[in-house]
Image (tube, rainbow, N blue to C red; front, side, top):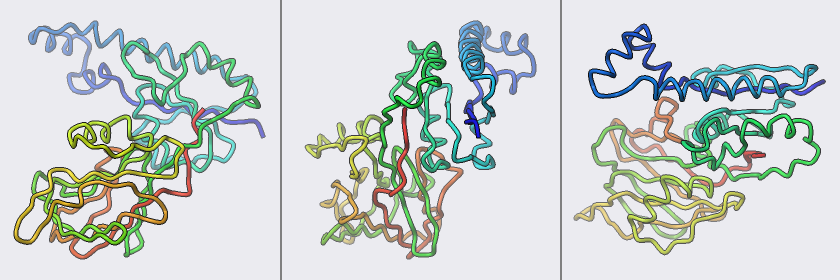
Length: 292
């Protein structure tokens, strides 16, 4: 069977303006009254559309194709022979990663002047040659993060998993790592992969003034950071960071009556409710992201 190229996109800022204001004219009037020019957002929208058009034209005529919006990923059935092509910002890659099982991901950057291109690594002009040279690909197999709970729930993430309270209240939990155990009240904690080490984890690492080595993307290791631990009569602040692997997973037991949550890659709508006494174990996953 011929491969199927699956394009992954998300609405542009211009799409969002039209959805809110109804017409181009109304959106332009709204922005003008606030000192902004809708042309800026329209140019970005056109860059995205041009990139999508370039990828569609690069797909061989005998191949199958599909297009999926980010909001519909949880309802789309991926096939083993799919080639996944996110077009847009880097965040689209972790958005789709947890739905895949070995399918290669070829990220396309529609605007290198705006997006970093850490995960969407290829310009639109390179797609045709890349699709013709699949046999010469040397993809990275990037480590993903897996959280499992003692009531049978499971969640995958590429960048990081957050554990905490869904509001700005303190998160209360017991943290176990190797032989160390500590009761915490904090702003929550993150567990990050080597891919996530270039994002949120990098920022927390800097704020901690940490000497902890951040893992490489293909390394079967993670790091965790506790955010703003509060030391009190009943809670500690010694167990703030560390490296997580299969032999030393991170184990979190909730002490939150309501509002406890665990989610991955910033997708709060796809979360595990971490109610009182529920325990989550977080470690590197056997599943990997295949990134071209």
